[in-house]
Length: 206
Image 1: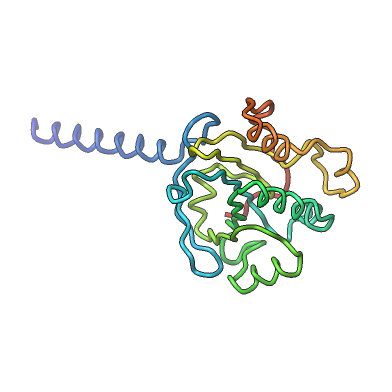
Image 2: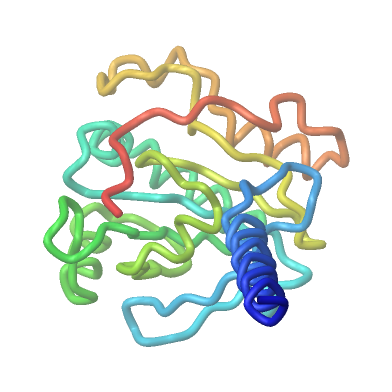
């Protein structure tokens, strides 16, 4: 009986430990803390790891070309303009596609490259995250969902691209672009005035 009790206790402790580890692995990212580590492969087969980007600021953009909210920003050239501004400021811009096979927005590497060319987009690379591991690590919920990481690897912004939660491109000129604002403040050495905002768009199709 004592053996069975100890075995049962050991099993229970093991389950609790595994549960704790699982919870830690899925813990939401926190602004002001180190950004979650990730490794992903882009459309050219190149592997990208956050640790290899130390010393450069990084922008992560969750995207789904079939989402009307994504089409709003690409159709108007808004996302491309932001990508080019980031490039001028030495950012690494990674567009992340976390749509699972068979789900809306899932594309092959070739299809993703075609979309980049057709839209005249300018990300540093497009990461294919079909298993959703990077998206879940960052708690990405919508497309678009934006994250800004500083040169030291600290997450300094996460949320929406702007404050107009619509699919109407006509709203862009009068919007506050939170990502551009965060970039400007980071470059000036100022605290990010809006470090967390509400993302809007289509749900990420894990």
